[in-house]
Length: 401
Image (tube, rainbow, N blue to C red):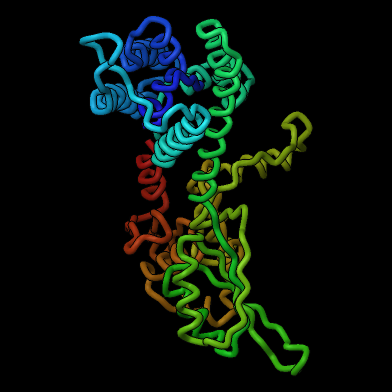
């Protein structure tokens, strides 16, 4: 809709292959979907050779579907051309308001691309060029895409000899990029609740029942000098109303503070994608070993017995980082965590998976091993039994392959 309803009828140009296709359309009359699919097929052939077929599967689907809907929308909205008999044209839905068409078209295009990105897709075009350049040169994807878009939009001057259209093109590019950022940020936005209540235990239990994490801090009301508990929980913005209703139902007199959490990383949220900022050339041998170990698969041995942990580490090899209960924060001296030691093996490993998220295994006295793997928040865990550590190692290596 952004391209066919607002961009093409008003002779506007944006970035990407759609921008190239629109410039060719203005100059020659060749419909945008034809140029769009031809350019993308050429780029996809190069991408398959350079980046592999797995990178291109969703892109191939998106390119051909986009080609179809570009053709379909033009057929739906076209009207007879009053000047040239027997020909059709795309109508101006909002009169001569070119700037308004520029804004609306960019918002729709940005929303469409964001929807595609949210589902891990790609519309091809300059995305492919950027990925190929990024593979061979130390240039960010955003820089390459921006450079391509600047060239494409600027080239429309040679068709119309009108700098206003070039400016409109850059306005479209800016609004489109801002719209994409808005939708992507909104998808990942979270909020942090701080709840002060005399009935903190009931509220904390209610929040935990919705599969959200809760931390309770001990505080003191300074006016009354009485003990107070403070509940802290971070949730997705779309779920805030549910938490508010829950708190109001349990304690309508609770004091609640909610703030935006611009960045949330950890289980159930985003993963941190940053380097530690340390050059490999200057790392000590010990630090290199620690870094290598951090990259290995972490397995929790459900014990604090150092002999058992050393035995497991030697048997499984350096590809695995075997950790004790204490190393992952499970202090069995505390009442809540102590229950893990009194359960049968399958429940022990499931307990570690549920509350700490790590894959875990338990070694019985007869040498048999019980292993749990999978996502920590799923209803049932993948638990397997193995005759000994060697058998466990063979199983894990087979799964990796």
